[in-house]
Amino acid sequence: MTILPFVLLGVLIGAWFLSIKIMRITVDALASPRERMAPRSHVPSDQELRQPLRQAEEWAREHGFDDDVMFDFQIASKEQTLFCRTWKNTAEKTYLVFYYGMGKHFVELVTIYDDKTGVTTTDAPDAHTLPAVPGAFIQSFPGSRLTDLLGLHLHGRATLERRTGLTAQERQEDTIDLIARSLKRQATYVMSIPGWQWKGIWWITVRKKKMIGKDVGWQLDQLGVFEPSAESPEILQ
Image (cartoon, rainbow, N blue to C red; front, side, top):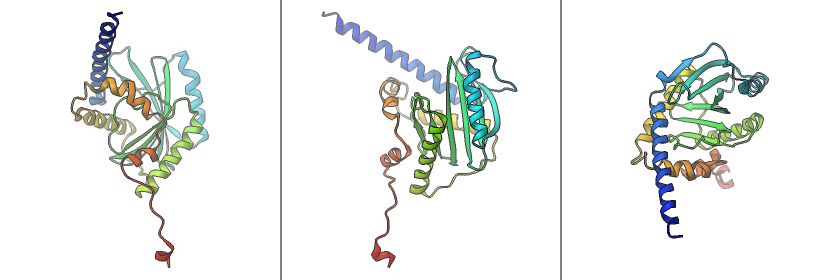
């Protein structure tokens, strides 16, 4: 029985060092995104990819999204590559992004307001593995269908616009450049946090789970950005 605490301590130390390695690999990849991004002209032949990608394509077409770009993103090695495809709804100034890698697929909707502010709504459970850059409002709803994600995204957008007065912008940059700049900005922010390498185990095991389901309204509340107060009848008169 007395050996149990030492075994648990060994497991915790091992998990801590593993989290440090994961943090370094992840942030290194985000810090140099452009050299890891390779445009594609065709979809990978992976059988597991076909059905979810076809569903995303059909949904995109039905909701006013046009084909945009396809590329691979190399994470740590050629064996660890993420396939990405995007669609763009110009009228709504919103992107649909599809990710596939290591047998899993996720989608997200992204609307950009300015160089520092945007709303992302995704079904990825790991969306909050790293702290988001201030102004980047990420909503994670694992298991949600795309149509449900769209409703949650529109609600998040409306909340942000109502509380801040911001309006979505039409971006002139190439989508790959936009994504690369966003990834590099997040890496820079994470590395600015004192002791960021050591905080990985907390971010991975606790924080990301606590952030699941936290919408834009909740995140703005934490920043002290509340709903605008209605003017009293006396003022209106």
